[in-house]
View 1 (cartoon, helix red, strand yellow):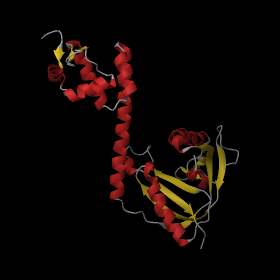
View 2 (cartoon, helix red, strand yellow; view 1 turned 60 degrees about the horizontal axis):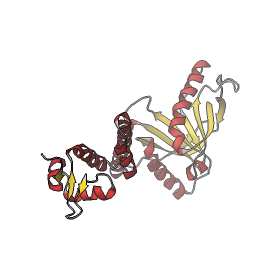
View 3 (cartoon, helix red, strand yellow; view 1 turned 180 degrees about the vertical axis):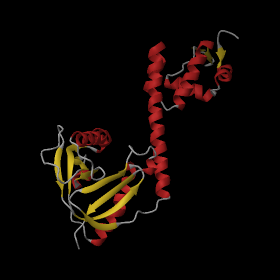
View 4 (cartoon, one colour; view 1 turned 90 degrees about the horizontal axis):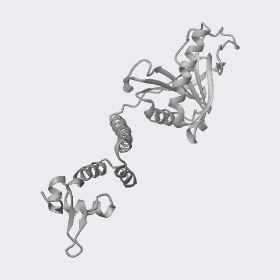
Length: 271
């Protein structure tokens, strides 16, 4: 093999078409080693084969041009780190795509949950309230609910029902708002008996609610909210106030997102 080769020979070594090689040349990702000023023929060297293989894969992996140039300019550990960073991005995108596909399939085959009406009793609870954004909700819950369980255990207070949360109406229409996480405990619990910093004793009032049990991951709760809200609004019984969620089956109980169960409780007038 000669020191340089024409584009056709280079195509055979790299499985890149002459059109692709011309395109990469225009983008400044893979320039010929030498171009004949008279004939315009492009010549490449064997040392460029590895670079061509890398460029091809980075383009297929949808790495932005600026990042490809930076990766090509880097050497050794720095280049490897840049490539691994992009692989992490691709993995995250794959997980998001897989979740979206699963969610869409669930929507297509969804059976609407049954709406029930009933009275929820007043409950004394241990609670933590905070201003939370939708983006931070999962991380916040992962900290708060173990905190509530630990506070109940420290105070010798056995839970009297599943954990839950209150969401103010404004939480859904903006960038978040007040969320109150709660854990029901014995009604005899002293109001100053939370026993942990940031945990308060809260008396949840009873009242009339329309309820529906959501089956599946919390990312699809909008479907049950839509079903429940349409029912309440059609009946003209919406009395405002925060929506309650009761977490019947949680990630502490199962690793299968489809096995999760969340009861959504919409406040309605007694009529």
